[in-house]
Amino acid sequence: ARRGIASRHPIDLPQGIAKIGWGAFIACSSLVSINLPDGITEIGVGAFSYCSSLESVKLPEGITKIGRETFSSCSSLTSIDLPQGIAKIGWGAFEYCSSLSSINLHKGITEIGWNTFNGCSSLTSIKLPKGITKIGANVFSDCSSLVSIKLPDGMTEIGESAFSGCSSLESIKLPEGITKIYSSTFSGCSSLTSINLPDGMTEIGEYAFKDCSPLTSIN
Image (cartoon, rainbow, N blue to C red; front, side, top):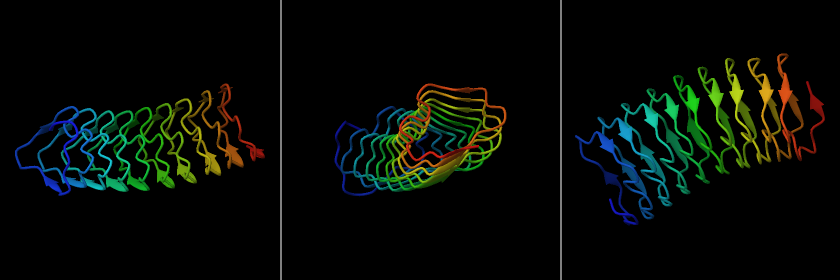
């Protein structure tokens, strides 16, 4: 598909397609919805990025990975259901999806890449499934409506600036496996009043809690 194609109608891709290439529908600014057929196993980098009118998409069960920047800057996308078989979400996959208010992350996902939900300013809450051991840098940065998040036991690493600019986040409990808070992890969390640190914590990085002015309790 050529850059900038406009379509006000839903697109139904035909059966038999197994792969969508890099940037296949990039900047199709009038594309509202798309149905992907069963049999697709791979979606290329930035395949639907900058589809600013895209409101809904149905992913087939055969998808095992959401690639890098797949839905980046899809500013009208409000929700998405991820298939059970997905194990990895690539970096920036939903970056700047400013209308995204809910997403279901199923058990089986083990890795969430850098910047995955960066700038998802309508996201209010999210529950990470058991099995995730690491979330990358800037994953939830500038999710300004995020009030709560549940981190699973077994998580061992939270990347730098992961929650920076989450100005509505009020409290968070870190799993016992976390031993280090990287730089700027919670900077700009201007509603954060309390945080529970695990007993094994050995290091808190630079500016980790910068501008967390209401913070009154660290346990």
